[in-house]
Image 1 (spheres, chains in turn brown, blue):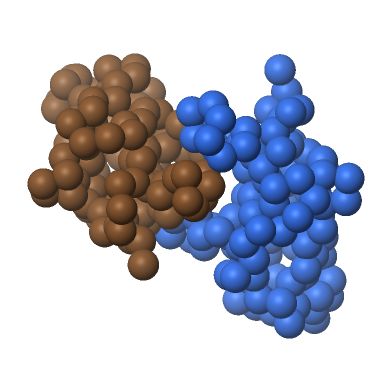
Image 2: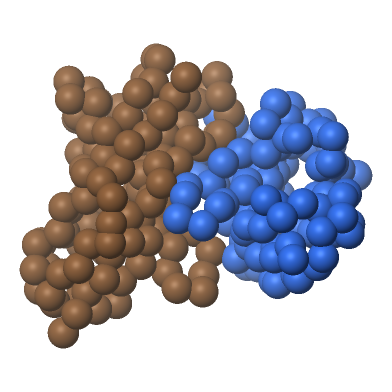
Length: 114
Length: 116
C-alpha cells in the first residue's frame, strides 16, 4: 500500500535559519505529492504541491521538488520566521484512480525562536 | 467564500455514550471526507463520499461508527457507543470531483473528542 515517511520532530530553529523537512514515499503508479500545514488552532491547509517527477512546488518561500529516483519530496525554506511555527504534513494522492484521497505522514512540528 | 464548517469544536463524553459530528462542505464540492487524527499522528481516512454515495469506507469501524450524507451536502459522523480509544480529532474535508480542480482537499478545523 501507499505510505509516507517524515522526519520526526520537533524541529527547533532560530529565526532566519535554513529549514529542511525530509519526506519519502512508497506508492504504486505516479502519485501527486503535497505539503499541508497546520498552524496552532487552525485546520490543515495546502502549502504546496507537485503532480509529476521533477516538478517543483513553491509557496510562501517554501519549496519542494518531486524526486522520483529517490522517492522524495523534501520541504525547504531559506529563512524561517517565527510565524512559520506549525506542524507540517507530507502527503500523497494516487489520483485519478484514488480520487483525491490523501495518505499522510505523521507530521513534523516546527518551532522557530527569536 | 465560507470554508468547511464543523461542529462541535470540542466534545467531552463518558465512555459508552453516543456522539455525533456535523460537517458542511464548501459549496459546490461534491466529494467529502472524514479523517481521524490521533495525537501526534497524521490524518487517516475513515470514509469518502462522492455526492450521496460512500465510495470508500474500508477504514470505517462499522461496528460502532456510522456516517451519512443525505442530499449530497452536509454529513454526519456518529459513534455509538464511544470507547476510550476514540479520543481524537475528527476532520472533515471537501474537494471538487476527482479529475477537476487541483486535487486539493479543504479541511475544517476539526472536532476534538475526549472520552472519559
